[in-house]
Image (tube, rainbow, N blue to C red; front, side, top):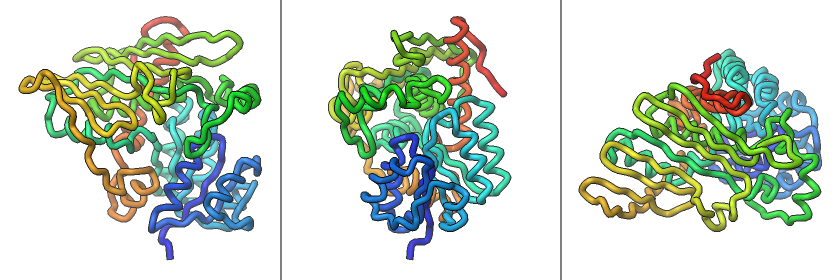
Length: 359
């Protein structure tokens, strides 16, 4: 019998399908329940993972009481992460929250406090953290391959959040046009926009690459697309004691990076005291420059163990071995990423450089 019972709650974000697939394929996990206030949004997952109809709910409290999960995967709209974490934490379960951490630093701190009171774990899932390319880059950094990291250049995004569903199923232009007016992704009150969707990736994994260091101040500029109330393009510059880092988010890349890498390529370029590393999303190698090899060379991506392939496997491994979850998915590193995001939001709104914010 499976040792860990998993429930998927709130299907606002299409990544729920990816996370449930990770649970379905894990040898020590079992999907015991699904819950969403809009039942039709669960239909694809019900079929994909053969979930019995008597384990499908519209009421979260009833779902948690009857299915008794050990772990709940949450995928609510960005602006509702605090509300849903507090609601689910009362059941005394471990929580995997789909990125971003929260819509604000204050909300992130509320979430951490709510779960800490139960003695359970809160994990923030950053899907880029499981890519072999980025994990290989971090291993090289930790091995001292490029010395001390001084600068992180990040560019990431996709054609737009409505062009793909669970398992990256591509949608048609007609589907996108029909969904866009109602989608929370394009509503400011629900945490929409490319900045809140993608900046946390860059600032959190960037903090991971930088060994937990924090910037001094932050400057951000966002676009203002006609007819939209949220941004589709943002550029954030973070100033550290040792230099500058840049984090750029984009809805509207020419292609999606999981099909064909757009130009600029999606991913990270790390500059250190003794070299550089270019690590791009979905690639099978990273490119390294060093003083000994300034022309650069390709390093094949490491073979990633199961515990480092997805959030479910990582959390279950941590629980089994009384360890913390992977670096960027901890609340400590994710909180620094959130500080930079909050500072960027304020900077863009006030059109000025702001000191790194804290609660």
